[in-house]
Length: 386
Image (cartoon, rainbow, N blue to C red; front, top):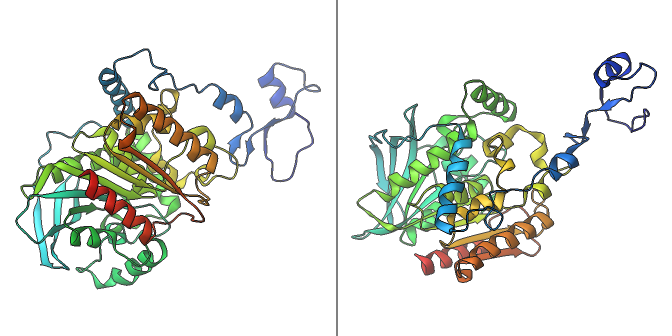
């Protein structure tokens, strides 16, 4: 590596200090360059060390059910947040009103033993029990709304304009949760920590929050994973819900949350994840949005990549029905990463003779959006599998 540095490159260790660290004389030490687009200059060496030894087909465990148990246990170990199975939900139902073909409620419940969380609960008209959708909101660049990105906030006029603008930008002007309820699904959607009633927290605050979780021996991403799995259990346990027909659905970070919940919870019978799937190595390249840190901490389980790739984690849900949709021109997920992940997923479902239960689609000409035609594809698929 030359001493001459290209623009925007920083050097942390040079001269005598470098000589001391490298065990060479002051006149012969090389500069130790730090970053290449927020990646360490030796990031390729780190990537080369990742061979995902617990992936299905690579793992020495050959029984698939045993592999699922082992892989799930590995993921859960890296969440750093203990299971919350003994915590009573103690739901408090408030603010009931009529919607389009449904009853709308605000419900406050304990997803962990640490705090109470407010969610929206939509119940279709009719006798039930109904199929249900755990609807998981995205990250985005707007934090005053969370659940309101997906369900029209009938209870808060101050958030309505923000919610409508978000729906117009990403969902073709449609509130996905309201449409699902109109089509006969019970819908539960809660704020993740940092959004809506639990926010707003901007990017720098989220990164600081994540580091403080680590200092406390815990994890922001692990908390979100635990809360989502607990929300799935709460939804499946409602009398109005057919526990055999509960799906997780989400867009962007919500898509990540959806397949992660399917991997960690047997209460999820099917999953539709929109605009969040890639191979880790293909994602960790200069210029990718993930490299900024900030929001990435909601989707970061330290050390897990030493064991499993991203699609390997999603594959813990196999052979249940799963639908992955990505935009061909999505700037957040390079096309080669999407292709690699889809190929890995298809190999796992094929090994279970369940190819028909996995659907992967890349939509030509689309970026990071969940348009009404895409939604209609998902709704039709949910009707078929649930």
